[in-house]
Image 1 (tube, rainbow, N blue to C red):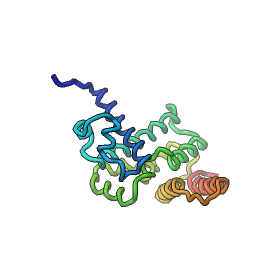
Image 2: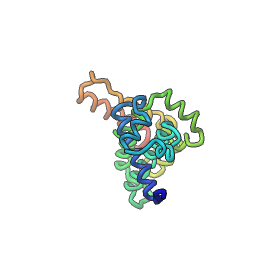
Image 3: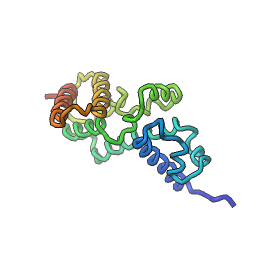
Image 4: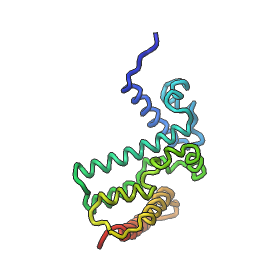
Length: 196
């Protein structure tokens, strides 16, 4: 008799696959993280994997969507039922978005992202939280003290550049200098966003 799996159990399996896949991508890199390695680590068969994801690319898209969802939940926790967060909370949240250590984007080459964009056009707009102008605009509307004449496209692009730079620091940068550089960049970014 086939084993009956509840919807809750299915979601638990799906989340376990995503979490283990992320850990393996972080440890071995995208190229060296195969479906076989993921299924072995999850202690599931390949058939079970394919019940949840049709390909490794679909799994990566699911990871990106999950991380976007997690970011929005973090945002809602900060709001804690309020209409807007204060300026300092907004700054901390923007730093979190830019510099989060658990971002899958750190491990995805640009050409791979372009491949995903072509392969999953319907999901692509929601895949890019923190990187799309509309998302940044909606986020900034929920933070106090934001300038009325802000160039949202510039802010979105600068956030993307900061994220890439902060996750790819050269080892030759001395740590205190790194902090000074980050603080200077954040100071400039926040001067574009917030009223004086």
